[in-house]
Amino acid sequence: MTHKKDGDHAFLRDSLYGTTSEPTYAGALSFMRRKYTRDLKGVDLVVSGVPLDTATTNRPGARFGPRAIRAASTVMAFERPYAMEFDPFDKLAVVDYGDCFFDFGRPETIPSTIEEHAYQIIDEGPGLLSLGGDHFIAYPLIKAHVRKHGAPLSLLHFDAHSDSWNDAEGRVDHGTMFYHAVKEGIIDPKSSMQIGLRTRNEDTLGFNILDGPWVQEHGIDAVVRETRKVIGDKPVYLTFDIDCLDPSYAPGTGTPVCGGLTTHQAMSIIRGLMGINLVGMDIVEVAPAYDVGEITALAGAHLAMEMICVYASRPD
Image (cartoon, rainbow, N blue to C red):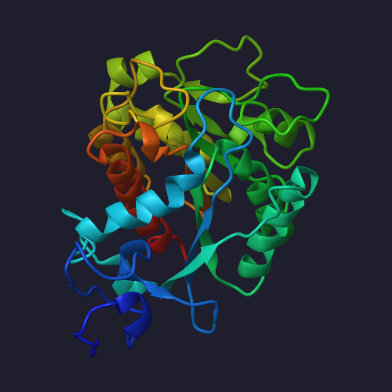
C-alpha cells in the first residue's frame, strides 16, 4: 500500500485505508488525516461535524467543537491507538465528510436538516461518527439511525446529566432529547445505560444508571460488566458528552460538573465494550473557548478513536 508523502493527506491520500504520518503542526485538518470526500463508494465509516450550539443552557461555543477535535486529532494521527491490538484504519475505510450545513437563521428547520444529513450518509451503507456541537444533535441523529436500523435502539450514554428532563413542549434543548426519544419509542431505556451522571433527575424514565460515584467506587471492570449485561447484542447508539469527564480533564465545555470520570476511565470503559453491536456514535459539547491547552479537544479526539475501534470490532 502506498501513500503520497508530500503532506495534506486529507486531500492527497491514495488509499482510504492505513495510517500515515505528516507534521502535526501543518496540513489540512481533517479528522485523523482521513481523506476529505463526499464520495462514499467503498467507505465503511464517515466522520462528520454538526456545529450547532444554539440548544445550550449555559455557555455556548460547541459550534467550534468539530474544528477543535479535528485539529487535536492530528497529534495522534501517525500511529494506531496505544495498546490497541489492531489499527482500525486497516480494517475500516474512513473518510471525513466535512460538516452538516444548516440555516442558522431558520432554527425550526435545523433538527430535520441534521436528521437528513445523517440519513443520507448511512443510507448509502457507511456508519457515522458525528462530532458536535451541543448534545441536542444526538436526537435527530438517533432518528436517522432508527430509520436505517429500526426501533428501538439501545442508548449508551456518557454524561454528567441525564438529558431526559420532562419537556411537554418539544423544546430544542440539550437537556430534554432523551425524554422525547423514550416517549417516541425510538430508544428502549430498559436496554440502555447512562454512565457518569452527577446531577439530579428524579424521573429516570427506566434507564439503567451507573452514576459518577458508582463508577468511582466500583471501577472500570464493573462498569463494563454491568453495561454488557444490560445492552447485550442489541443495536446500540453511543453518545458521549465530554462533560462526563471531570472538569480537570475537560474544562472546555458548557456545563461542567465536578466529580466526573478521568480520561483514562472513559477510554478504558469504551475499549472494554469491544464487540458490541454499535450502529452509530457521537462525541459532543467540546467548547474550545473554555479549554486549557486543548486538553478537552484532545480528550474528544481520543474518545472518538476508541469509538472507531469499537465500531471496527462489531460482529459480522
